[in-house]
Image (cartoon, rainbow, N blue to C red):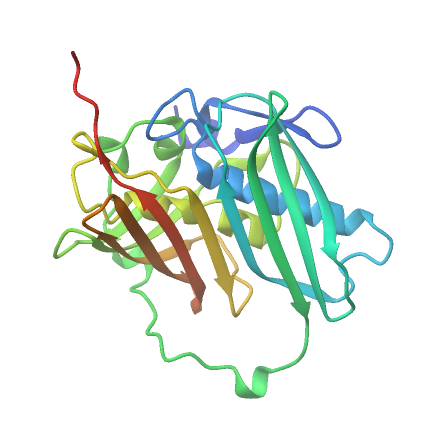
Length: 271
């Protein structure tokens, strides 16, 4: 498929006011009949954006500072419905909850903290060094190590890793999040963050499974596109747990951090 064809495609097609059908580009890395969580995470932000835009008063001058996702079970490559509600209203702080349902079962619950938007530019600072620019890095064919439509859809530039469990990379995608709908810079940025668990692997995924059961993104600055930068560390413990931690970047520098808890176990052997 040419890049021009890819540019006209999307990860999801809207099928109702709150319903979306994934395309083959949303296919997962661990199983191609499941959704990769990365575009679904972006889709949740997209649904929150629309919910805020449609309610009286809009976002109320609030900005998303944190979103945490809990993955409750298998996310089939099937139509999903996303509902959003406010569980802690407020003029300066608000908590939203979004639920993703497939086949009548909740598969993801996400909670997003919205914080007051203020001018703090006089004290804005971070000691975190920026990543090398994406144009200074060579492309990395991630699909040589991972399967799935999502992995095949992204353009990835990676700093050559010096050891297992450490990597820095930039990711972009020419695939739209939802067909025929503009997405915010935040939704498009978040739609690439969950890729972190596949760029700094500790062990060969043909031998070991280490899927994440959550994703939490904290932001101290709103990102802009089109690249999502990940400076990632993956650690495995001795009793079946792991942790993938990423400092998040855009072209202007660091914007926040992401964490993913992993369940680590050997790949099942064929009988």
